Length: 469
Image (cartoon, rainbow, N blue to C red):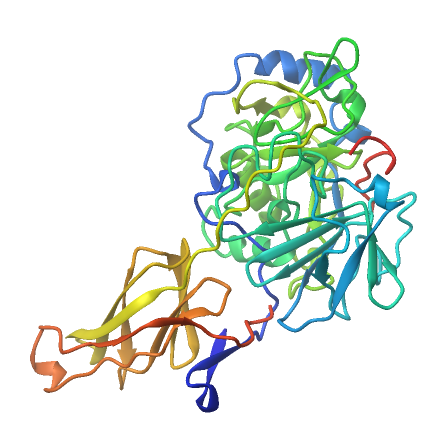
C-alpha cells in the first residue's frame, strides 16, 4: 500500500513510502506506446518487408531471445546527483539531441548500470545504459560510467516527462536519445512484477508496446548508404540492410492466430501483449527483446517461468519467428540527416485545484459514499484518503468512492508527484444516513507540497558503441 503522511508542522506536507517494488515507469494512457493495434491494418508492404527480413536471418541469432541486462533504478527525492561528463570527449557528446554536458541526474547509492553490479561500466565497448526514474521524470544515460565522486561519463542523457504526451517525433525530428531510434527505453521494457500481475487477470496483457532490436545489417536503408526511419522513431542509428526490409522505428504485431495457449502462463502474457500492442524497433543488436532485470523487483523471472530462450525452446513445434509478425502502418519513411531539431519542452501540468468533497449517499453496507470534484491537474492523478493511496485514475475532475466509519481526509495529487491539493474533509450538518442530497462541501486551493514522493544473460548490444547512434 502506498501512503502519504500529513505533517502537521508543514500543514499537510506530504511524504510517500512504498512497501513493495515500484512499478515500471509509464507514460499517460494516451501515449502512442499504449495504443491497442489489434484492429489496425498492416502496412501495404508488410509481407515483402517480413519476407526480406526472414531471408536475412530474421531476429539476431535467428531466434526471439530475451536480454535481462537493463535495470530501472527508482530514486527518492533528495537522492544524490551526478553531473554529466561528455564521453569520450565533450565534442563526441550527442548534442543538441541530448541534455547539455554538465546537466545533473539523480543517481542513488544502489544504482546499477546495465548488466553491472554498480556504476562502473566498460563504456568503450558496451552500451552501459543507466535508467533512473524520480517522480514523473525519467533519466536515461547511454555509455554511462561513474567519474569520480560526483561525475557520470555519458554520450547522451535524455530526460523524459512521464506526465506529458509527446509529438509524433518524440523529442525532435532526427534526434536520438539513449536509444538509437530516439525512443524512451524504460517504458518499453517489461519486468517480472508486471508480468506476474497480468497473470492474475484472465487474458491479461501488459498494456504497452515492447522494445525490440535487430542487427543493423537487417534493417532497411536505401542505395548509397542512405539511412531511413519511420515514426514513432525520430532517428536511425546505423541501418545498412536492403531497402525492402524493416526500417528503424517499425511497429510489428504478432499474428492473431499464433498458438498462444501452447505456451506457459507468463509467456502468454507477453505474447498477448505482442498481439495487442506490438513491439517497436528501437536499436541495433542481436538479442531481440529487452526485459528489466529482476534485481529490484519483488517477483523473479525464474519464479514465473521466463528465461531468455522461452520463445524458441519452450514449444519446439511453434517457436516465435519473424514470419509470425506483421509490420504496421506508422507513416512514411524519413531520410536521416542527423541534423537534430529539438522540440520545445512540453510545459508541466499545474497542480489539481479547487478540490471540493461531499457525502452524497450512504451505502447499504453502512459505508459513506464520498464524491470529489476538482479542476486542473495532470492527465493522471492519485487519490489519497487519510494519507493512504486509494487509486490512480485518468483525470476527469471527478471521483466517487466509499469510506467506512468516517469520511476521512482526502487529497488529490498529480500522479507520482507531490503537486497536490490540501487535504479536505467532507462536512455534514445532519445525519448523512437519512438523506441522499449532498451536504455542504469543503474547498481548498491547490498548492505544491515540497515534500518527498513515494520511492518507489546475454546483452543487447548496438554492435559498436562508436557506430552512429
